[in-house]
Length: 265
Image (tube, rainbow, N blue to C red; front, side, top):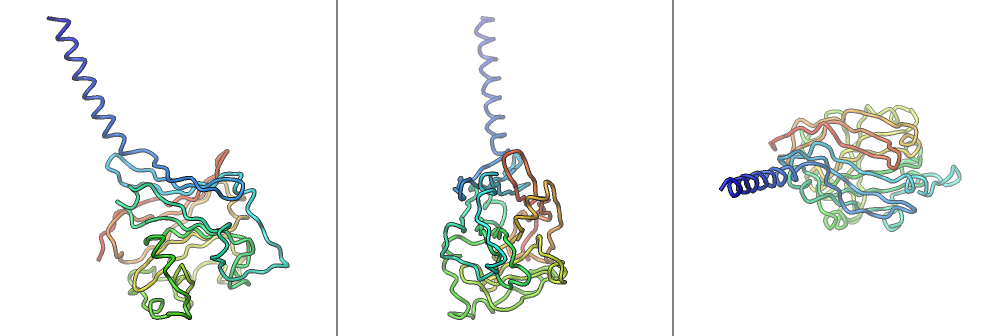
């Protein structure tokens, strides 16, 4: 009888442990699909708690990728975004749990070997990290500004963008309107290194965009800055308040951190 009782107790303990492990499996690091980037790789990841709430959201780029992206020269100044060159444009998807608790759907990572317009400011080799709030199909459907400007001109209310941000006009196909922070040093004449951009299309905020030079990423093993915040948001969920750069032995990481829950209004 004692032996049977002991086996029963062990079974209950094992079942209880399994339930705890199942619950814990909701937390941890959730990795997205790996994508080839030149001679290396890149992927997204999310750090979530046991309730499935995102606490950090990152992009990892392998050292091999960072050291193999093509870089232009001063003889080839910045130019418009080249959407047709898929060798330098990458869609990085998130684990499904990310979209369940944050406004973000995927990342459009663009590498600009010669920078882009305006070349006097952003004509330096850099990455565009578009954390999109819309699907890849919706992004692909955004036309050229000259083709149909109405939805570019339909901008969100001022409370949905940070107070220091302005619309420079126009828009980019397969992206939207890029809102700039007039306090960014490069707009005052400093050499461009990193900035944070908001995007919109057809009345909605559609992306958050850290834009960072290769030079700056390689020179900063650890970097942190605030993300300017709007007074209101259009969708309830967890939103980042910090941008961080991290280097490890194998990767360079671009991280959205300091998530806080915000309710749409």
